[in-house]
Image 1 (cartoon, rainbow, N blue to C red):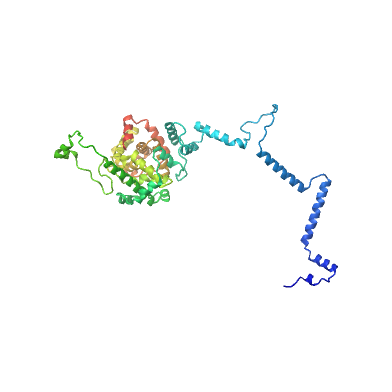
Image 2: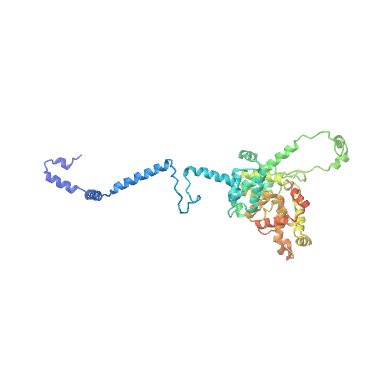
Length: 458
């Protein structure tokens, strides 16, 4: 390694070394020295004029900030009361709330809003009912929930999606909670007796609706319908396995005589036959799948946030609200079609007479609308809004909703020489208008007809 040139030449004169140091000195160090000298001169001038320096001002500002922060953290002593002045006093609404009491006051406001829900935003009130549950009497809270659904409606985007809709449906349908594992157990059982029939229907479920196709897959629809079929199949087996009373006489006499007499056997009628899809061909026993259940299931899957939620809502709906719609003979649907003709004759006699003169009964144009609760008529967001009303006040009102759609088409139907073509497909749903007409026509329905409406799907 080579040594430094200065160490190799110690005989150099001091003047030469100073000159070399002066040559090697950086101009930046000189400017830094001049700046430091200028700063000292400025500080001396400020001290001479009894003014603190810039550094002193910064330190004083930092000390004031620290002291103010310390004062904010320490408990404040309330100021002494002052004499009333002639100026306008500050109102309580303009006063700044101390941080220590903001949480308590906010809690009091929440408690007051629960006691007086009318001062609350309807959207917030609906969300509060879903998240917190009823705060008082359950029947009155349910009545309030129905009123909010009818008058305010559920907030949803342009696609009809709402974060609380499925939970409102579960509350109104009184559907029990179910674990995801219970739903998965039904899925793991594989194909149900109605699987082939389900596969023949799912691919055409709302096939022309882009909103549904974008959100719900056919595989999801198959899984849910297959799980419901297994659930109905198990309930059917449990009902058959129930012990029957032996040697109990009835209107036909003793059971022993019934088995011995061929006349009594003939009077009992032939046994019911079971179709290949697992649904009863007879009319009294519940089936496990009928055509049209795929469309009836579609809105549940669209509105739900999981398949398990859609499963429990759909299963509770078809077993409690409209079991007559899913029997093999669909007796509930046929009763509903007859009620469409009856109710239309009451709310609009002229339109009813005209359709009857053209031999247009409800069985020819309203079968799908009765079976699917108008889910077969687009657009889907309007279907969801209509279902909010039906679940709140009863799915039996769907019969009057179909009559309302006919009333909306009244002028077109009366001026048409062939209403059959017009009724092959209903015009797009207008949920708000249909609900308004339905509520208005409800007053015209006699009590005995309304009783038929309530019980026709049982």
